[in-house]
Image (tube, rainbow, N blue to C red; front, side, top):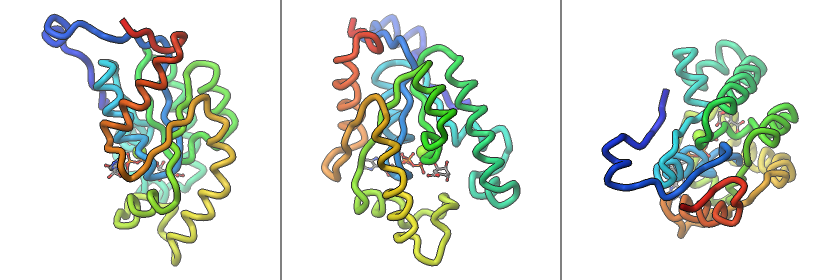
Length: 196
Ligand SMILES: Nc1ncnc2c1ncn2[C@@H]1O[C@H](COP(=O)(O)OP(=O)(O)OP(=O)(O)O)[C@@H](O)[C@H]1O
Ligand SMILES: O=C(O)C1=C[C@@H](O)[C@@H](O)[C@H](O)C1
Ligand SMILES: [Mg+2]
């Protein structure tokens, strides 16, 4: 499993600066930076990082596009729900989800009962620039991928707005700067993050 944890040596030299009380769940469109920012955030907080897409891929020993092709999207969504539920049972950490995960009410209920959702909000141009050259998103394998991304964006944004917290991504903000924005936003939530 792809977890990053503080080693004992790290802990001795750099005492923990944060105490995370609940799992922080990154949600948002494909390309929003859930995986990249989530990983950087986990490093900053010294907590485990897990990505639901990666967990599903590792368990199946297949890539997400291969799972969609072989077993269909409905199968993938079932695995996604199971994996998110299992990961929410673990010690608090950062959980990056796939772009469609927050659309399912069961996942939203589970996340809001046991974690804190953070929507990485990015505009369509930024998202398109990040995903346009990649072939790893099966839902964009259409005749008009930009049109498909636009449709998904319009349908999904009202649902992402239900997240507990929103952090806006702009082209000027690096992955590290975005992760720091999330830390700053979490610092206003002592029920979730204690700054030591
Ligand atoms: N703030 C940023 N600055 C520069 N590049 C970024 C930023 N955030 C993400 N990226 C890059 O954009 C691409 C998409 O990011 P990432 O894979 O984290 O998106 P995602 O939200 O996890 O997408 P998916 O839902 O498909 O898993 C990656 O190549 C990543 O390195
Ligand atoms: O936005 C989506 O529905 C998806 C995003 C990716 O993270 C993967 O979970 C998969 O490609 C589906
Ligand atoms: Mg991702």
